[in-house]
Amino acid sequence: MAKKLCLASVLICLLVFILFVVDISVGIPFSRASIVMDIVMMVSSLTILVLSWLTFREQDK
Image (cartoon, rainbow, N blue to C red; front, side):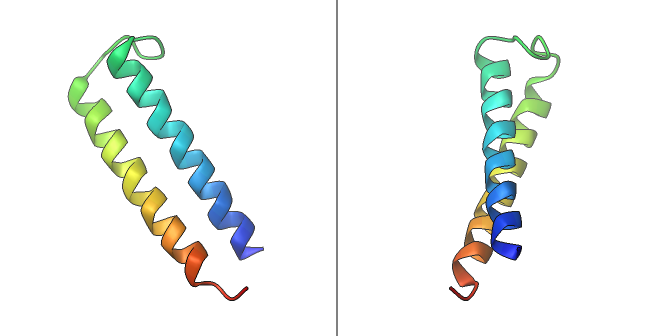
C-alpha cells in the first residue's frame, strides 16, 4: 500500500509540474497570473517528487 501511495505522489507531482510549465510557457490554465507562483510551485512539486521517489526506493521489495 505504501508503494502505491509513493507512486501516486510521484504522478501527481509530475502533473502539477507539467501544469505550471504549461502556464509559464503558454499561459493556458492560469493565464500567467504570477510568474513567481509558477516557479515556486514547480520547485515545490519537484522537491516532493524527489522525496517520494527516494522513499519509494528505500521500501522493502
